Image 1 (tube, one colour):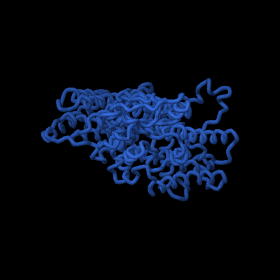
Image 2: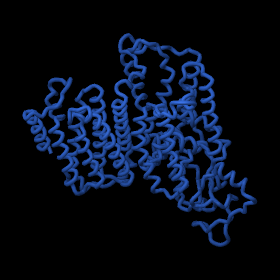
Image 3: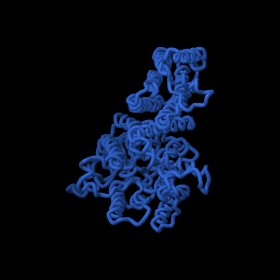
Image 4: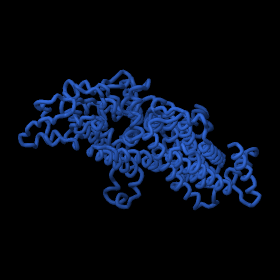
Length: 589
């Protein structure tokens, strides 16, 4: 492998002699020749052909989907922005490269979900491949922003190395035992981290390509001179704002939506519950509408930008917590409407309306691969403190800190008691007001997402960190939503506890209530519905306002008689709970 890599470098060094050169830019002198070789168009073409060849024709023990990832790296090399010195190619490589990356990460994540068990060598290969994706995304972004080729050249070298290493079989790899990847939380953390970082830089790349460098002018950067808390504090402050600006941008959300949304589509295809399919489809539609279209794209739509619609106030997920002064009447009415709307929806449908449909977290947590990580709720050191329906001390502390800090900052802003800061353009701005919202729902929220192996899935709900989840608790307590079973005797005889194992929130006390009362209501239940589909006896369903209306409108409903479900003694039929007869295996949600 070393000789092969050396031959590539020597061949790349000869290409400038024949008139094929590459831009070097502001690269330190010792590294300029190597960077010039790695970004040389001829070298990129030869490397791409080589990686595609070794990925397609070597190592018969590689899974076909892993071969797709290696061959896909060849496509990434060929889409380097330095391949053709043309603005058109630069834009085309950004768009096509982003689409290719999204497709490859979907293949990688779905492969992990399907495989369940991996050898150590294959696990290391997948991590290296995801690191290569992060380096490529970062290199493309820095190249488009500053014209600096160093990171881009490093990504080319790393991708070539990953492809060559993957093509060489080893004797030890053939004898390695396959191990469940769920037993290796740090490995899962690496996969989630580099997947997220790649999506971040690709979103930033599209922001830069579509809006140009001007998209940075809306970020309240601080200057690096004359600041009281020093350059380190300024760098952290500016870094948080830069990250928040990218994470809230439409193009990052589109990239993440296509990546994680594809996993949701796979889940729709494999689920047997028709109502669950409808909810997952509605969840994707709401994400596209509420997270992407309305906040970022609706204003440019002619029908929205004119007439009455253009005067309607738009309230985002800050819901009034980032305003710098007293509310205008229209804005206050919109904020009040959103609070009332969320409360009413929670009463009628439980937290399912918010956490399983309306919130963007649902798209990230309910796809096949991440949903498979729900076991971390019960075996991680942090996740186990938030198990069950009881509001633990840790939950109360986390939710209290989130609520108090957000509302206190908003109140101080209304009272004009927050300190002002001087921005790089000389303007004075109270940018400290929206910073907690960006910190919680930008940096910290995504940090918790990649920390699923240590905190568990749906950790925004399980820990109480989300202020909307905490505010919905009183409404959920008096609401109509609950989990119910058709026959308690089935639960009393059950020994698998599949419902509790499938819960993405870690409600492990669910079976106890089913056995004793036949129903379960928890303010932490997000209404995802995995427990319903996991029940091997078809004994569970969700009850909300639809079932309440059906009971009220049905003329003298006759209590249904239970079917002979497994694990129930044969003989006379056992009466079930007096629910409407329309409840069936295809309408449990």
